[in-house]
Length: 148
Image (tube, rainbow, N blue to C red):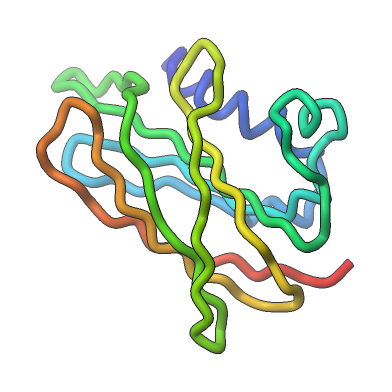
């Protein structure tokens, strides 16, 4: 449970607490792995956190936050490293690469940055390969970005 709380801590630190981003994420299970994800415009990031992680705050930049956990037989979950890559596709089919990097911290979490032209809905297709696994899985989710 502690690792689950820690995984969500980065997301909480990166975003300011506004209701506009409340519906921007979720959790999906792939076998014995849980993937926690969220997406938002970088304009909503806390200025201090954006500076700490070298993220440009802009209405034209989007951010995804990904963490992967392995679930043990006793239902406890522990953060694991993974290789994460992917792209964002808007409603007209234009694809934008998502540059994903690990966040240097005391647990494993990843952020991905990409260009956004709001208003538009982006569908993210991410390939995730946990470091302790030979199998990959694909996470797909969508986020509506609005002009502010």
